[in-house]
Amino acid sequence: MKLAKKYAESIKSYDRSKSYDLTEAVKIVIDTAKAKFDETVELHVRLGVDPRQADQQVRGVLVLPNGTGKQKKVLVIAKGDKADAATAAGADYVGAEETIQRIQKENWFDFDVMITTPDMMGIVGRIGRILGPKGLMPNPKSGTVTMDVAKAVQEVKAGKVEYRLDKTAIIHCPIGKKSFGSEKLTENFNALMDAIVKAKPATSKGQYIKSVTLTATMGPGVKVTYNKG
Image (cartoon, rainbow, N blue to C red):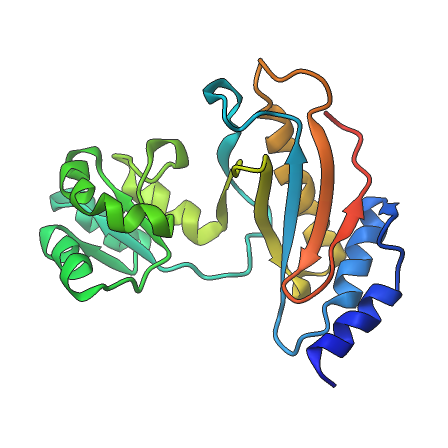
């Protein structure tokens, strides 16, 4: 059966114009995830803020209670004791200038997250134009520029996610895999939504949470009733 046919069947299995309570919405997402692989479940939140305004940015990080279900490869740019600490914490790669040159000359990107110490940002900044478009540039706000590289590595490995507003005032973020089941997906959903609500800008007026949608990688979107914030 082709995926297009499965998708069409999934759409018919529920009312796309209706918003469902969280328990029912999660069940629908799981039931309509019909791909042969373990689909990722994503949360999409439209906010009532203006992303063009610097004081209305919404961005943060948190470690999901049940992780994301994806093992991320971590590169740490550091020297000396910090490099040793990163290795001990489970970093997949640890390097300095030679690693930056490898990225620059060989177009090497066998990692999902780059973490660095503040003193190495001058070196990392040389390839900012390469890292930026790929979403790999370390940033203090996301906890990837830090002296405590060991903690940063452990958090990424434990399932830390970064949420941030895009240009259309929507946050897109994974909350786990289909195989997690309803309970774990619900726990991750609530943790992320609580964080987004707490991150509400002081200058935000009117309704903050405009809409909430859950979707699996190959499945249709399911609207979720959400009345907090």
